[in-house]
Image 1 (tube, rainbow, N blue to C red):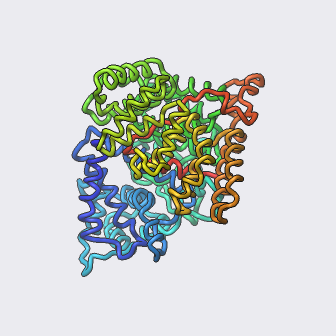
Image 2 (image 1 turned 90 degrees about the vertical axis):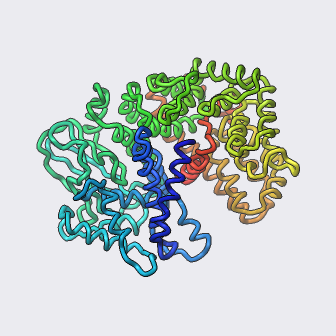
Image 3 (image 1 turned 30 degrees about the horizontal axis):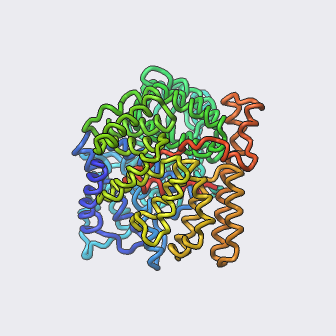
Amino acid sequence: MKQTIATTVAHELAHQWFGNLITCKWWSETYLNEGFATYFQYMIMKDIEPTWEIEKYFLVNVLQSALDVDSLEAPALTTEVSTPEEILSHFGDNSYQKALYTTHEFTTAMPSNSSIPNFRYHLIPFLKVETSSSLVITSDMLEIFQTHVDAIYSGLPEGITLQSAMLSWIEQPGYPLVTASISGKNLTISQQRFLISDEDTISKWYIPITYAESYGEVNFQSTAPAQWLTPGKPEITFEMEYENKWVILNTYQTGFYRVNYDSNLWSGLSQALLKQNFDNIIEENRAQIVDDLFNLVKINKLKYSEVFKIIEFLKNETGYFTWVPAFKGFQYLWFRVQGHPELQAKLKDHITRLMAAFYNTTSISETKDEVLYTQRQLLGSSWACLLEEKTCVNDVRKVFSETVITNNKRPHKNIRSIVYYNALRYSNDTSDFDHLWILYNETEDNSQQLIVLQALACSNNQEKLKELLLETVKDNSKIRSKHFVFVYTAVYRTSLAGVKATLEFLPENFQKILEKYPAINIQENLIKNFAVVLTTTGQFEKFKSFIAGTSEFSNDWKSVGEKALEIANFNLKWFENHVSDLKTYYSIDDDDNNKDKDDGNNEDKGNDTNYSINIRPMELGLMLLSSYIILHSF
C-alpha cells in the first residue's frame, strides 16, 4: 500500500510537466500525457526509495502487463477519436504503459552526453520547447528527439531516422516476437507479431537489438543496440566472436518485445540458469525469460513440458521479481486444471517444490516495515497457503484465532489479507464467516471493507456464498451498492464452491440481476466474465442450460449469451490441447486419466479447494486485467 500511494502521488506530480506544462493537442494522443507521467511515477520513487528496487517492479508489473494487453487486438497508441466512448478508450493500459515503454526503448538505446540517465536526458529538450499554446502532437516530440539525437548518435540503420523508427511503434498496434537461432558463431534473428488471438504476417517494426552472451565481452552492462531489425530486413544473420552456449536478447528487457530461441539456445539457457549464481544472468532477464516462456505456450511456440524443464532453476530462485511472472504463469495454468483433481495434485506438488526456497525467505510470524520483504511475504505466503502448505495454513489459523476471534483485534496490516482469506478458506466453522460479516458492517474504511468481502468469498461453505450473492440483488442489502460487482466477481473467481454457488444463483435470480443492472454492457460483463472461470464439461452444460432458459430476452442478450458460451467453450478446448502434454510430463497413466474424465458432474465430486490467489484491494485493477486477458485469449 505504501508503494501504491507513493507512486500515485508521483504520477500526479509528473502531470505538472506532462499534462500541464505541455499537453496533447487532442485525445487521440493521450499517451503524450499519461505515458510519460507513468514512467516518472516509478523513476521518481527509484531515486527517493532505492531499496524498493522500483526499476525491477516496473519491469514485471508495468512492462509485462502491457505486453499481456497488447498481445490481444489492442488499438495503436494513436487512433482517431471523436465520441466520448472513443476518448475514454484512450485512457487504457496502452496509453499509460506501452506508450512510456515505446519511448523508453529508443531513448535508452541512444547515448547520453551527460550524467543524466538516457531517457530523461533526451526528454529535457522536449520539455523546453517554446510553443505558444503548450499543445503538442506526436510529430512535435519526434522532431525534437530527432534533432537532439542527430547531434550525438549515428548508430541508426542507414537511411533510417529516429522519427520513422518510433512511428512504427506508435502508429501500428501490437509488438514483435523476436526469434533467435544459432549455428556455430552465426546468430540469426527474425521478427513477427506476437498475437494470441489471430495471426499477423504483415506488421513489422524497427527493433533495437541488445544481447548478452555466455562468452566474450558482450554482456549486461550496455543497452546500446548491437543490431537492428527493420521492416525492410525482418531477418538478419551476423557472426559473433565466439561459439556461445547461450545468448540472451533484450538485456534488462529495455525493448518492448518477447523473445523465443531455438532448441539449442533454450538448452544452453536451461543449463546456465541451474549453475551457481545463475551463470551471472541478471534478475531482470531471468524474469523476462520466465514471462516469455509461459506466454510462448499461449501461441503454441512451446509446450508446458518444455517450459517446465527450463524453469527448473526456480527451485534456487529467491528473487521476488522473478517469481512475479512465474506465479502469473502458474496461475493461468492452475486456473484451467480445476475439476481435474489428479492433474491439479501433480501441479500443486510441482509448484510447492519449486517455491520452497522463495517461501522460506519470509514468515507470517515476522513482519517488517520493508516494502520488498512485505511483497515477498505476501506473494510467497499467498501461494503457500493456496497450495495447503501446512506451516502457512497453521500460522494463519493461529493468528486468526488468537488475534481476531479471541482478542477481537485486526492482524498486522502487512499480513491482514493473508490471514483473513486463508482463515475462511480452511474454516469449517460458520461462526468465522459470521464474525467477518459483522466486521464488514462495522468497518467504515473502504479498503478494509474490500479485504473482508474478499475473505468472505474465500469460504468453502456454498450456502454462505449463496447468501453473500443474494445480498448483491437485495433492495435493502447490507453490502454497499458500490461493492455489488466486486462481491459477485470475488465469489466465482475464488473457489469451486464459488463457481457452484454462482451457477445456482444465476438462474434463480436472473430477473433480479436484470433489474439491478439494466444496462446491457454491465449485463454483458457480468455474464462473460463468469464464463471465463468455467473449466469442466459439467459446468459448461449447466451454464448452457441457463443461457437457453433466458432465450425470451432481447436480441442483445442473445448475442451476449452466445459470446459467453464461446468463452466457456474455449477453456474446454484449451484443456484438450494441453492435457496430453501435461499428463505425459507428470507421468499420469491411463488409469489415472480416468479419474480426470468429466462425466458432466465431475465438479460436484471433487473437493472445493480454493483455486485463485485472492486479490487485495490495490490489485483489483490487475484482477480485472486478468479477466480481460483470459476473455480475449482465443
